[in-house]
Image (cartoon, rainbow, N blue to C red; front, top):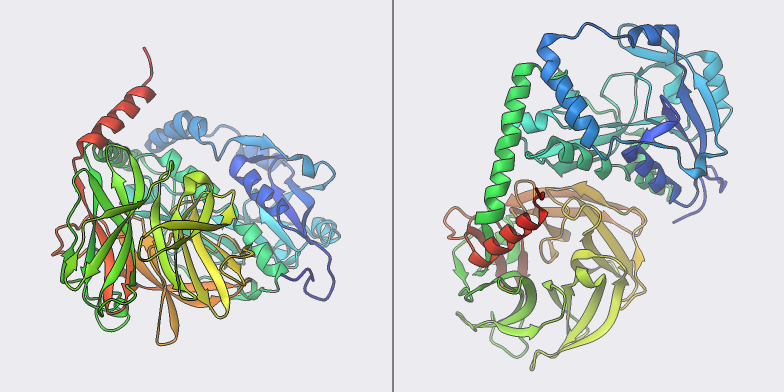
Length: 574
């Protein structure tokens, strides 16, 4: 990453914040904290709305519309009291010496407003690179161009479908599995800004408070990521075409709409309770006699069968399978490593299965540690067999060498320490090693992170644009990347409906230490003819075969007892 600022100087990126008071919501503070963590970015100005006589008049109690009473009661007694993201806090210590300008907002038409020319000159004197809008109204006029990279504003909702308010509300009403959000550079046209970053989050149909908080906090690192791009010289997004949208503008819900919303939320809560007690994912590993590019639908229509399912070990399940062709074996012979989850112990271990012709051996336990293990990423390099299992509870990613004859593991080194990484996926691309993963403590199913190194054993360096993307439909790794016709493809989990619900196939368009871009070219869902068709979250090619897993939601006695015990522990005492 270069330290040079566009234009040749190494001056920092200077930003301003537009707000209504000298305090911010928790998610906005989180956004600023992420910005302050980027080298070469500094706060330069607070632009605070000055209360005018017109504002005071508009703020006087208005006659309450009877058809909005349910929403206003819900907002006051539930949303305002329970939301962690919206809780107000004073500015952080780093803003103690930041200049403050108070501005009056002049009305433009019915809904928009502009900043006066004298105030614009005062703002321009601070030589800002961008302004974060956390207050004021719909902005028009010179304020949009007073900073080098304009005014950045969040829109919490997919602007192609949902405009207006309340943020993240109508997705629950409509049963939409995902809730979108964008960070945009504002233009003169309402909700038609230049998209700087965007993402999709799973809609929590059981709780609007949780769903909205996740939406607000989930995108709070986007301004920091855009600043990293600018520091690296990647400014293409800042000058791209504005987003066209003609989606209808929503308003506060009526009483009738609120009743529908409350019914949807109650239905979501009851569904969650039922699933948590009476339905658990019983995973199974399967083998498809077709190469991965055909199974994935890169060549022709996706081939999801026929599948030879491995026998289910009693009281356990196998998931997250990875495979290599066996050295010295016949064509098609393979060694499979998989998570072996014991329902009674409530913990995963790693087992191996040997495939010879059409036969598969019983699972053989090969690695058992005091922490949960899963996703045993298996690969060959320089004539040796390696495995990187997920061990996020140990807060590290370890590289193991495997003796193919004895299946004994030897720890080689720690690749990444101090992070709870999920589904670490390694591959070599254009002379560099890459490790993709999601983070248990930062959007485990939403956000994709990456590291790179000149050699398998390191040193590993975090990608300058982390997190690379935010999309619950295609971020979390879901199998082994593969190359076809010169293109690199990355399987990922689609967790929009449920954890591990489907596999998204992403084609990587650009991957360097400072850049990343991919597009989803297909989504593989469980085959309708499969006996296990409630989930599908791992895809691994091995020669002319493809190894997959799938799940069926079942009642599992051990899981029920543990879930019930947990609910009783958390239940309020009389």
